[in-house]
Amino acid sequence: MNAVPTAVTDLEVGMYVTALDRPWIETPFLVEGFYISSETDIEELEKYCDVVYVDVVRSRLSNDRRTRSSRVVGTSVLRPSIASRPVSAAGSAATGPVKFRPRGESVTAELFPHRKLKAYTDSSGFAQELTPARTAYADVALAYRQMMEEYGRNARIDVSGIRDAVNPLVESMIRNPDACVWLARNRDEAGYIAGHSVGAAVWAVAFGRHMGLPRVDLQRLAIGALLFDVGKLKIPDELLCKPMPLSAGEFQLLKSHVDFGLEMLRDTGILNRTINDMVEFHHERHGGHGYPRGLRGSDIPIFGRIAGIVDCYDAITSPRPYAQAMAPSNAVKRLYAWRDVDFQADLIEEFIQAIGAYPAGTLVELSNGEVGITTAGYRTRRLRPQLLVLLDRTGKQLQDPRPLDLAVTTHDGDGKLLEIVAGLDPASCNVDLSCVPV
Image (cartoon, rainbow, N blue to C red; front, side, top):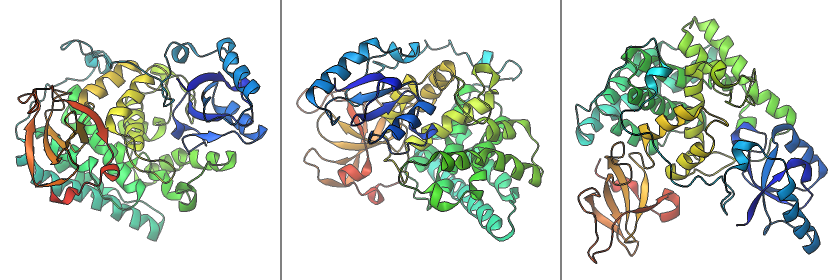
């Protein structure tokens, strides 16, 4: 294994930092992986991390320093939650199989003791739901853009359009969340903030539906997710889109979007506790290392905890100016590794069960070399969903995508087990999704 956990106090100039003991998006180091070029870099890391993961192969050290650095790792004092996990060669905490609580052992009732929870069932299929979902999704995206334009004209936000637009989105996802999830996975929304906000709203509703929250809470989850980054409208675009690490001062300014957002909600008359909690607490972290208040564990309101998870998941699975999109299956492993470090373990496990490793709209590689895109079945048969095969085993795009249900077709033409071996980035395999008949 190339990546080894190293106490920040043991870092040296020339080491290559490949991972942190917390999400990159919660630090000024917005490029995932960098060489330590000066003592200043080490001082900055000390402000945010106890332990980082050093790639000993890529590090630019002399042989004696490389050997000494490898020995130092064994004497470093690590956070228990990090030290107990092996580290993969890629530098992320390796989790082994993501394990789920047996069916029926949900902790949702404990998380929401005063809610009357509901067991939702699908009342429409993916294909049937796609048309109304497409309209609802587009209307929410339009309402968000109009809110941004209104702020640009008058320095105030008008959320009336968003309030109206979320209802059809929620109704569509109550019937069947797959279509909206597909659209969120394959969105082409111009501008990261707008696309991220609408995507986060979809994940929030999917999460809430899975946990059985009543319709009114699903509506509030959607609005809260759409607005938790609204304060970034007051942050300069050049800072939001900066493709390199932020300075300490720039990071402080970025963090102020939480307070800006709360002010904007007050100005527009939004007093709902759920929505305000999502705005105020979506950057708080389970271990107390978040912001703005550094709250820990259950001191973070439950809807703030939910907001933090959906914000992080959509961010790491979306292309950003400073980082490539992560495949959903890898994002799930990352979240699982962060349970009870950054996010409450029970909530992480519920979220993973809600969306699966390959949510609708995820490109996947099959064991026979074909490439497909998931459509349904990912919530109940997480590793054997339904999909459309787009590329044959030679990499040639099929003129007519072929439906495939991995729960039915378990072996390929050679009699070998047919299964998903990896999630893919569309850019990496040159897939034209415009040909997909959905």
